[in-house]
Length: 376
Image 1: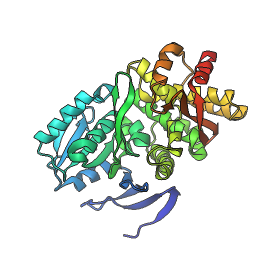
Image 2: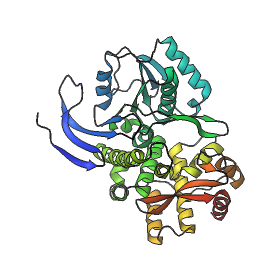
Image 3: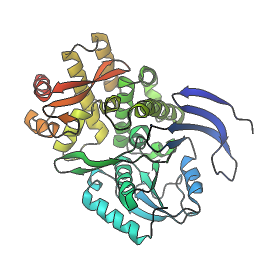
Image 4: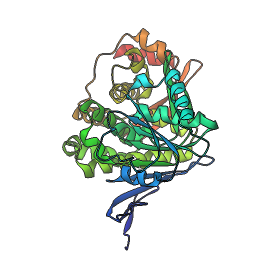
């Protein structure tokens, strides 16, 4: 078969070819991306219809442990019957991300006879991926990790980049490692049946990527909002593709978040604090969307964006149903802001939007953020 390919985004090639290890040789649109930060393990990403079943075929002959969100365990796009993977069902959600649960999973891996040659396959949304990656990084001092993200949020963001984490009562994602997956298989078909709140949570992360890093993605979300909200397969694929390509470009420059990777935290400074105050009752992306409103407030205060750009960003948030909602007390938010991973002393490394598709890390004192919160 002759393969036709075109460069679509940083480090990404769209090709028409059979899936890797596809015995039926069925041709389909496959977008393959690679993430190779210096000094870190490489990640290969498959994006397209059939990705999950192609991953299952690669798993044949491997010893492994599949951590599966029970909400998708019976999904027709997921088939592990031909593998020898031990399958462990869990209920996805922030409640899953604890050290107690991690210990239970690690002990289950021992009982499943996993060893250093095993692979951990995390199938589910961001919480399952975070926990699975965390356990893979610790078991036998680190084993191979694969992701099959099934939520919009995990597709556009959390499955790529290597961050793993569990929570503490004092804050979100305070315990974690960097352990990139070697393979990420993304089938947009899972999005069709995702609950509305989960889907919108993922869209917030895509808006974040467009606002902070990719003006073309931002324009696509503006131009095609109706079809995106209808979950059109081609548009969802394009949104995931552009979001990941922008993220990969950042990660390859800064895999350990010492500089530019902090831009991926746009909206997350307030978003994480809000999640903690609300005790996980509100989805991550919904909190991030409210954090984007706050980031725009900070941009307005520091004059880092024009009035026209600010209005355009606010209009896009509203178009996707993210209104500017009332916040809990400033005191409760500042308690968790002070424990944020990006805080050093009394200064937070804040991801500041500086235009549509542009942002920069900016050191801002916590007292200034509290002042801006009080004005809003």
